[in-house]
Image (spheres, rainbow, N blue to C red):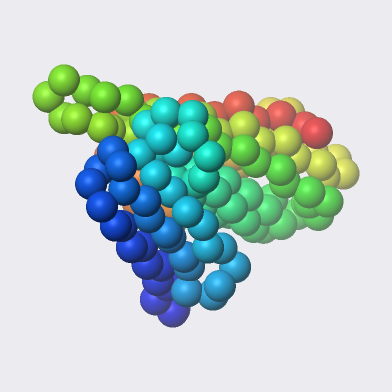
Length: 143
């Protein structure tokens, strides 16, 4: 399997500086700053990219599990909300990720969706990489 890469460049101090992140494929390049990361400023931030990676990986893993179980998924739509908090002893820390997924597939029940979604949450490579996050919640249902 291939190795993927991304890069970032930061210029200046933490609060006054600016940065740019880009992925190897060129599919994403964007600016980030102290304000876009720790406040509500314009631009992206690393946590937003973590959310995108987790939602994408989880959706693919769930589609694969559903296919293996004999369903033909029409769509798997997932959002991920990554919470960054300032912890007294740890500093800025990703403390929670909330996954919400809606699945469209003929013959699939809500119970099946929840069971396969839980398996995808535990098995997708990004979930495994994020195992140090204290809480990863899952809301899974039919679309």
